[in-house]
Image 1 (cartoon, rainbow, N blue to C red):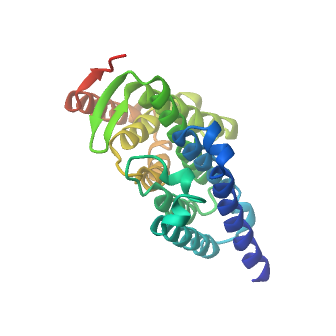
Image 2: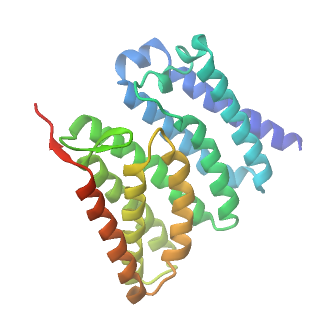
Length: 255
């Protein structure tokens, strides 16, 4: 029990310390708000990847998640904390509850995955790398934009999300050798496209919860299918993408 308590306190202190570092004036001067936010996102994900090596059950992970969410909620509500230690999160203009959804999404994923470490690792990599790179590419290089419930996103950002998600699925499962290459390629493409669609339509940071949970269920239900069974899944995902492209109006950003 003492070891678990020390681990929880250490991890929580590390996360708050990272927030504090990114809230320092030097970090604010050198990094754009979105870059600091996503850097914290990646750092938190890196810490979360080690949770199965630290804890042997979901109970401590949920306790850590609730404590983290509680601390982040206090920071959100107190202006002095929000503008200092919480500035890495709260200087972005859009309204977002992503920092609260993140620990809850990780804890839910941990509970679902159990002993299936790849089913924990892969959705978390998609959340940490795919979502972060998509946002940064969209902010810096996004020209072809489309409207969503949460404002505008870019086709360039969504394409980045798809490519990174596909790689995050293909490489770990490919090295593990659980599936034949043809089925894995088709399955990874279906799952990556579905997760890209989820990221595209999610609003106010709830993708931090939806991506890991949906990622687990998609991997668990799509990857085991035979290659010929994946064709309807691919067609369905493609139809969803076309429907969204039709629904959302694309516009070329004027320089």
